[in-house]
Image (tube, rainbow, N blue to C red; front, side, top):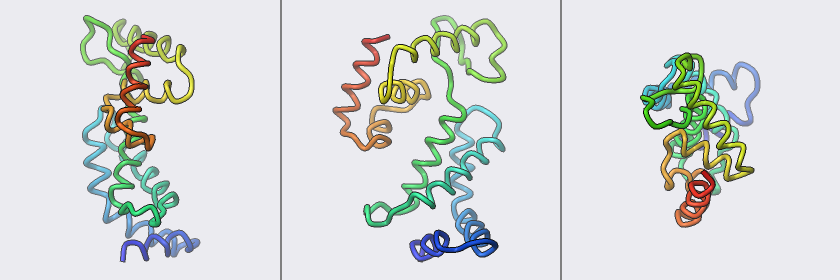
Length: 164
């Protein structure tokens, strides 16, 4: 039933497509809210990011890969929300600080500067992995995100830590 609805959504246009998305969103709204509630930042803004990620997941979903839609969408929503509310690198002596509009204290500004300088040292996948590490994701999460083995993710993480 869910696969049929997703295929119908991909093929639909106009109001029919809007109605199908509304029905699919209604099924996954609690998931978007649950993930948004676990991250710092404005809850409504993060829910919007999650809704856009759900839409992207609908368009990118391919049932031939053998993964059910719900876990596929959950991962996409998690990554989008994490990227939107990503914290900066921590500096010894600074309390839980985040880069963004609330970065008004000297510690927060220093955190943002340290993260920016650290990320400049990396290119490509290493930079993306470093950003995900800074966002608090584990090596297992990173491996799943990139579709690589846990051992390869550990190697990349070790290389990043050595580069810091």
